[in-house]
View 1 (tube, rainbow, N blue to C red):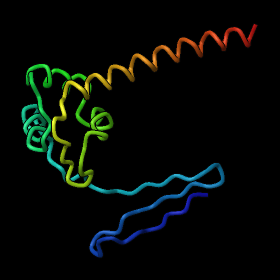
View 2: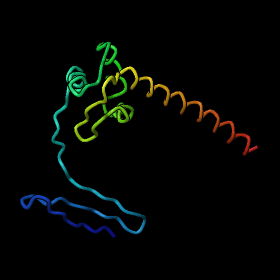
View 3: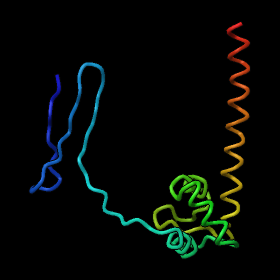
View 4: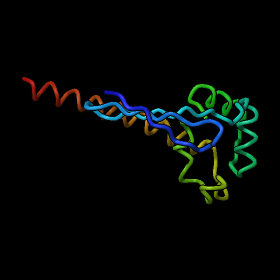
Length: 124
């Protein structure tokens, strides 16, 4: 059985919320994304404007293009002095963000390799 409920945040347009039973819950809210997309150059300008030092903008563009702004955001979170305004601590460097990202990536690969070895040993 599927129920359809409506949540009114705007009186002119109710948002449907659907809940599926009995296998679990499914929540659907029809909302429009209002932020405009930024180019790589605009992303770099935004980061520099917030106080992040970027020595090589070409390398930063390549990293943002390959990894993405929002994936890297998790790795610069600890460098933010103010998490609401997204202002960075003094002497925060983009290269440090990339170093944290690649360390995490390598660590995940090593852990996965170890888990695979343990899994094979347990099965045998």
